[in-house]
Each structure stands twice: as structure tokens, then as C-alpha cells.
Amino acid sequence: MQQIMKQAQKMQQQVAEAQAELAAAELTGTAGGGLVTVTVTGLGEYKSVKIDPKAVDPEDVETLEDLVLAAIHNAAEAQRALTEEKMGPATGSLTLPGF
Image (cartoon, rainbow, N blue to C red; front, side, top):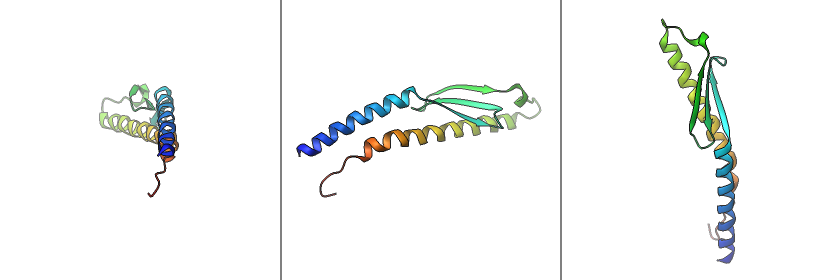
């Protein structure tokens, strides 16, 4: 039981460290060859959207909407990958006897 408690404490510390790293990280997602860029933190908080003026065509708003959505998805995927990278080692280290 004492070994389990030590593992749990170590895991808790690793999770806290990983969360701090995620909070400090900023990732970007792009679409349209960089015409639209979205910045998100490692915790999933969207910080900014940048749109190159070349992407703005009043006659074709749907394309711009698609580019923004694609950049958001790209940023979200980068955030998910970073979360798995940082949290995986922290949460995967706990082994319970008999399981």
C-alpha cells in the first residue's frame, strides 16, 4: 500500500508539472498556406486569430470561414498532441498490483 501511495504522489507531481508546461505553451494552427493562423494555449484556450488580407474576398466569405475553421482544427490537434505528450508519462506511470 505504501508503494501505491508513493506512486500516486509521484504521479500527482508529474501531472502538476505537465499542467504548468501546458499552460505556458502556445501552439499555432494554420490554413490556406498561412493565410489564417490561430494561436491556442496547451490548455486549449484560444488566444488569437490572424487573417492575411489576401484571404478576405467579400464575394467568397465561405472560403474564409472554411480557412478559419481549418486553422482552429489544426491548432486543436496540435494542442491534443502536446497534451498527450506531456500528460502521458505522468498518468501512465501508475501501476496497481493485480491489474
